[in-house]
Amino acid sequence: MTTLVPRGPHSNEELSKLYPASLKLQLVQILLRHGERSPVSARFQNTGLAPYWPYCNAARRFSSVVMTKTDWSTWSELQWRRRVETFGDDDRPVLAAGPGGEVDTVCQLGELTDKGRETTLSLGERLRHLYVNQLGFMPKIISDADMIYLRATPMPRALDSVQQSFIGMYPASARTASFSPPTIITRAPADETLFPNEGNCRRFSQLARAFAQRTADRWNDSKDMDYLNSLISKWMPEGSPRVAVDSHPRLSGIMDTVNSTLAHGQKTRLPSAFYDTKGREIIDKIGSEEWFSGYKESQEYRQVGIGALVGDIVTRMVGNVERSGNDGLWEVADVDGDLGKGRGGESGIKFTLSGCHDTTLAAVLSSLGAFEGEKWPPYTSHIAVELFKDESIKTDSARPAEPVPRQSFLGSSRKKTKPASLMMRKPTEELTAEEKAKLQGHYVRLRYNDRSITIPGCRLPGNHMNGDETFCTLQAFKAIADKFTPRIWTDACAERLGEPAFPVSPELAGF
Image (cartoon, rainbow, N blue to C red; front, side, top):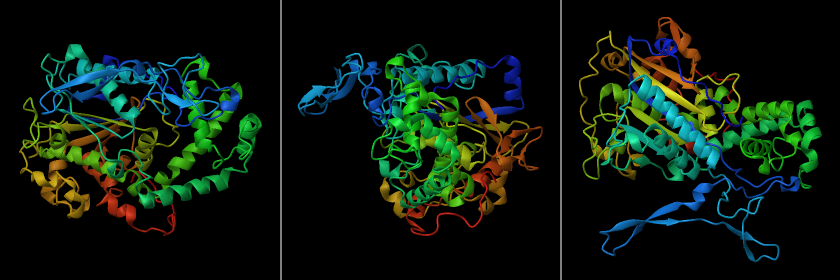
């Protein structure tokens, strides 16, 4: 629920089993939850918990790009330190301070802390050890990052975490003196699909509220909730004296404060009752049901909640097979007016790092039927989606596909036009025999926090590599994902408004 304790490096024997010699690694896509952060809301100050935390040393050394000539020809950096101002007792402005009077390292709410920077940097170092040092999949030294797709949600902690992980994977000693600035992709909040976008997808918002209410109806008067109240209700506000799924703060908000305090120092701790082992297990169980049960039971929930992101993951894998640039190269490579080829001559993406959130990881795994028995994703958790090719099977995928018109990838007009009839977004049942043949010999594996995950539908005969159900055929994985990948996400978000939220019977995930 809180800080991840990563496993140690794989031994040579483990590596030989995890990465069989018969398979060639083609593409790795990493979804990483941001690192440790301060709470997103200041709660339980009546326990003595400080509203401002002193764990953000980055605030001493911020820098911003500034223009230094009015003809736009010269740019520089302004280095500055941040201090946070708030209201004093008589409404006058005062500096926000930590529990020890700290003012120069104060965190904003929800900000990546020093601990979060440490763990995401460490994640990058672990990724380097595996994919660079042990497997030799990625180069030891790079002069540009145009074989790496970097993306983050609009939340600063997600962007900071991607940057820290990238630096861990490619520190200064692994970048040439002429290294070009890496490209990091972001989206406007209304277009964001790297997390379940309840604020900008009306149908998903309706579904999420319905499943949350069902959880509240099921658990609010339960013995488990009574147990939580016996522990911590005395610190609940007068206006909402009983702990409940939909109390104020909500049960998920209580979990947020418990987890963030546990991840940091003693100066920012709650009373010990909040950390009762049984109580934390109850909070995790009910919180996971509220937030993630919809993905396990409803095809529509999966579609509008996380389907667009899973579709993008499949798109990059199929683009890798086709060698069409649809693996992310169009988005990150070269400069304006000359897209589609890397600054170092790269013709494809090999690695992606996407900074996202706990709700992203759990949504992806739940939608693929691979989150049973799991707890809420700890900070700096990650999913690795690995694409392999069986070198013994010959396909025509090595032949470059016809170039995709650039205008289909550029500009906002994409939303107003019919999706191009490309193999990457075409449902599996609509693929031609020739297109299906291109997918043959390719396998997909998911690893969650360095553990291989099996997708239920991939266990079926013919859907996995002989002898190992964790290696799902690309065609089977695509067929499972296609069932909840929306044709047009924004359209799906505007459809069925006001319709019943629950399917007639549970629609099992992962098949």
